[in-house]
View (cartoon, rainbow, N blue to C red):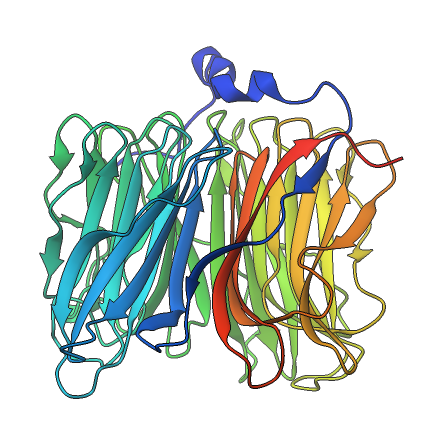
Amino acid sequence: MTCQPPSLTLAALMVFSPLAAANPPGPACMVWSAPEVIRSLADGRVAANRVAVGMDGTGRAILLYGETSADNPTEETVYARHRAAQGVWGDPVPVWQTVVGSDARPSYLALSVGANGHALASGRRADNTLRPTRMAAYDPDTGWQAPVELLDMAGDFSPPTVAVGPDGRGLAAWVATTRHRIRARAWAPATGWGPDEQVTPGRSSLRSPKLAVNARGQALLTYGQGSRGDDVYARFRNAHGAWGRATQLNVRNGGLLEEIMGPQPALNAAGDAWVTWSDRRGRIRTVMVSSFDRHTRRWLETPVPLSALDVDAEDPVLRLNEQGQMLVGWHQSYFLYLHDNKERIQTRLYTPSQGWGPVNDLNRRGRSSGTPGLALDEAGNATTVWPQITPNRGWHLHTLAQPMGAPAVSGRLHANGSVATEPWQMADGEGRHAIVVFIRQESPGGSRELVSQVGQLGDCPP
């Protein structure tokens, strides 16, 4: 059974989050709290470089991390810690346990939290063995459910990709070892896990599946296919579980060095769908985007380049709201693999009435690194967070608020003199709330701490 991509209906236009009505009436900026220490990393037991964080529409947050046992370093437990809105972090709750053997490498973790607080988590061992890959679901009323195990994941360190919609319905997808198929399992709060679903026929070199789920229970899957992920495909799943046909989104020119990296999907309840990725042709990577026209029910025939064609741009991420506005951010440098003060974090905002706005160059001083974190609320107020190095002062997390119709406001999140070392994570709750989790080191050689800061939209500074 197959299905077509979701069509536009009156009901779809009326679906929106009840939390959106609480947005500030005008331009708003993310107001950040003081840093809050979650845990000391002095004992080395926490796999600090394997953390995942998520946030719901009310500002409640979930942190997932792996920790080895002090008595048995070959055993790792994945814990969840919960933070109430305007509250503090609760005690660790064990989600699953893994025996890792003598080579105790930490798990890669993934987490998605829906607007109503439901969540899906997944974890994959970093030793590329057939030890079980686990997935677990969280219900705000009953807590964490017993994890399920997957034994058919392909040789990829990444865990199953997970996505949860605003009403708690979610989906997990992964590349299976059996003939390289993409498989999926759905989750619903009322019924739990559904059966395995075969999404793609047997194909070689499938990679990087990503998911988006909307308020109607529809899903959008994107993935790369080819010897190096050279083509990007998108596929819809309707609310009844039927998958539509795959559509290739990129246009190939026949070059020998064409390569697609990291397709990222977004889907809202009205049927707006977007996918962004980094397209390498020769020595230059360009951030591309394709959109689904809900009226004609077709994807763009030719993707749109968002970054300049003479610079190297990669690691794109995007946020889409229910009004059809979209924010895309990426990391850009003037030369491939050149890490100097020309590295930038850039964003572009799309609105249905005006189309694509200009490229926003966020950091003109200091070197940036990695993927930015984004938030976009229903009124179009945008927030971007990125790591930036300051000479002789180390790494710091910087932020830029771009309130709709008002001047941008820049700042730095954590206290002066502290150093935020990579990696770090950001999550947002419908663009109105946000959280960043990072590792802070007060001085070179000093103790390290896992730290969080939370933000909430409020009045912009004068």
